[in-house]
Length: 293
Image (cartoon, rainbow, N blue to C red; front, side, top):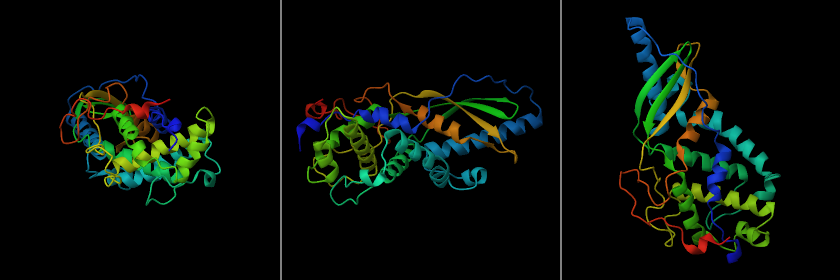
């Protein structure tokens, strides 16, 4: 493997943003007043719908989601959220025609198109978020048919996620595989190299956090576990009341919510595993050989 192309995979921090919208802006809301039985009942309905959504996003349970959205949480994301994100990423990165960017990324893996890689990445990140497991609803403000929800939870430490990708790069890099052969031939300064580099980043994220690389002895233990922030953070999102009286999240607000659950501020060396264990200092530090360039 040509060491000149072994550069840091912290580009994942930037590329993941391509698949998640920016956070919500300031909201002008009015808190529900009065303590009538009708108002209390409406507040109970809203809270139940909020909990159904957050349970689906942040835990392994999506009980009640199909009642609100017509299908399971996983199916809803794959049908309504991912296709537009995949199409946008392919257009933004100019991975066309897709046949030109179809590669084998690791031994014993089939060749994947950019759409294949992106779909697997998005599913994996969605499932990583379910490792957060706990949240605390702080406030629900209602104005007409809009409810603004504020809650506290951990986030994914995205810096640590990128560091994990960086750590496994050398374990998989093989000049005999077509994607790494293409990287060897590309100039690190040109756009074609960036296109390939970004695809490899997405693939490594998917393969690592989907537990598909555990047979590689060079990959540190627990590197495939979702790194969560040590701290909890306040996150706000909006729900809207639909024609059936359910309080549901729009596709755009859902994308904003997912974006807000990715943390870029906490250092890569400080994170918590899903079981609550704190990572040891330096346990995921990137080796110097992967920082070239």
